[in-house]
Amino acid sequence: MTNAVEPQRRVDFDSWGPYGLLAVGVVTAAGAAHAIGTTRGETYAAGALVVAAVPLQLCLGRARRNTPGPNRTSATLYFARWALGFVLSWLNPFFAFYAVAGYYSADRHLPRRLVMPGLCLTAVTMAGSQIGGLPPRGLLAWTCLVVVFGANVALVALFTRFGRQEQALTQAQAGTISELERTNTALQQALDENAALHAQLLVQAREAGVADERRRLAAEIHDTIAQGLTGIIAQLQVVANAPDLTTARTHLERASALARHSLGEARRSVHNLAPVALASDGLPEALKKTVTEWGERTGARAEFTVTGTTEHLHEEVSATLLRIAQEALSNAARHARPTRVGVTLSFMGDEVTLDIRDDGTGFDPAAVPQRTRGGGFGVDGMRARAERIAGSLTVESEPGSGTAVSARVPLVRDDR
Image (cartoon, rainbow, N blue to C red):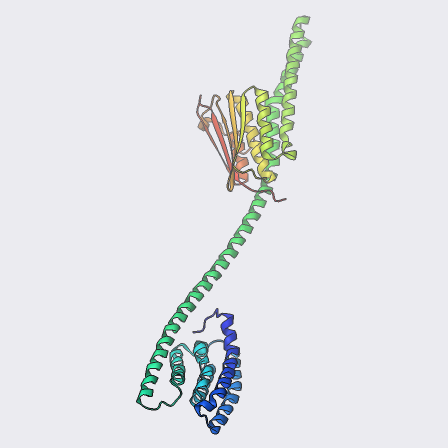
């Protein structure tokens, strides 16, 4: 069987090597003709056969090119070349230089069942040349022919076995390489599809985030600013009906305090409406500023830590984590009254984690009402934010034992 991944050097040798070997045979045979007693008739016969060897080799090469692999035509031409080489070696043993080409091309021109017979015929020619020429003269010469022929056949069998093992190994390696190429192609396609899905996911998260911010802002206006304005109106109504100046001043001071508080809440809501901190800073710097400002505003001890190798994240990933941190800190300030809060941003291989821990009053997560799940605020809102970019969020808390919020999202780099 012909090797499907045959080395180019071997192909080149089979195409041009026999011509070179024929030339070497002609030169050496001509030089030794007088010493070995070659007759004029043998010289003429050898010359005619050398001339015939050239078109024969041309036909063999053409048959190989027209029909790759062993076939009947190439086998016939191989045995014709062997016969020509055998006769030339009979006339002059130095023509064995040409006959040796049969060793190198048997498996390229012969079917598998004929390879060994073809090699043995070539071994006969080589053995005859090695004992000094054919035919053998005397019992000793015949004995030498048999011994040398046996040695040639043994070497042929050994090298043929090694060659087939090498051929099988080469074919196996070629198959492995082809399989790896197919696997790499499939992997690259999967990576491209994954990148496209990530991009689509981030676009959807950005669109959903707009609606989330509207709902969050509406809830904050209702819970803080609207209630503050209602309180101011109530205090002013009392002032309008106050029986004396002292009572009126007292309620005016209350209305002024409510107005200042409502103004602060309005500013905070506007500040949180868009992650403006990310416009000039990366996520770690924006989180550090957020944590510092929160600590100054609440009076609690607030610490921020970054672990791992910092990466420049996609803007939607950064915005999502910043929003989660802001919401978690806001919830802690409103409900937990902590004295200490720790925020940790961790870059871990192909994902980013954000952990917010406090030592506040804590709560029972199972007992929290499912307020507007996915509505953009509270635990459900934080979880919805993380899930929109293929992440997750967990909350661990017990009454009196503080709260731990952990968000895990894919690490998507900003390639711009």
